[in-house]
Image (cartoon, rainbow over all chains, first blue to last red; front, side):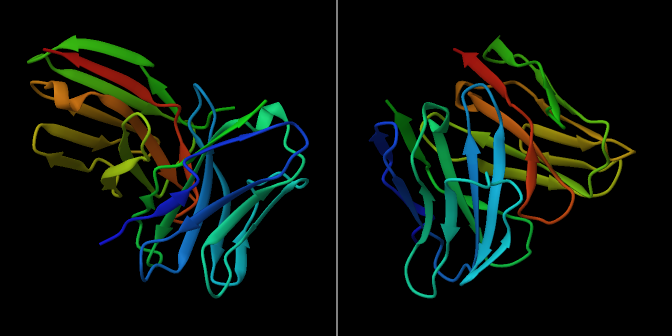
Length: 113
Length: 111
């Protein structure tokens, strides 16, 4: 059974470029969450999506960040015009419903030069 | 501002010793979870505690939820090198997936 798959695992971008992070949830899971982990800090909730719907994006910066979870294909976290402060590990998690257990992926580590 | 404060930030002990990690908040949570994260990987859920005063045991790990549901502790008995990792507590308030994480306690167990 495949767990949550994230790619790329590592991504390097220069300031001003775009970063796209992809997440395939556990098969059968319809709830996807994105978290960001900065060095020396805990994970911070960014956004919660279900298929084709953004349920809660209260943790996501209003500018430059967007997320989607289309009917077909993986969830995408998109960061436009990246800045150095965007350097972090981005984790995706999925759950089959409101069960209380999140399954995390291995993360995508973004470095902005 | 960290809603959940974990202490200590770092703990280094010898194999066979006991250790306790604390997770404190001024806020009430409907439930609290503990995760372990290893370098280069995502967090893995260890336990969920729901009821104030609840105690759960997972082999050598004992988890307790405070009576007021504002704090929790993780106790490891006879630690082993395989227990090395970053231990994270996470509180659930609004919805199950929207977790408030602490900054974590890095535990290192040396043989």
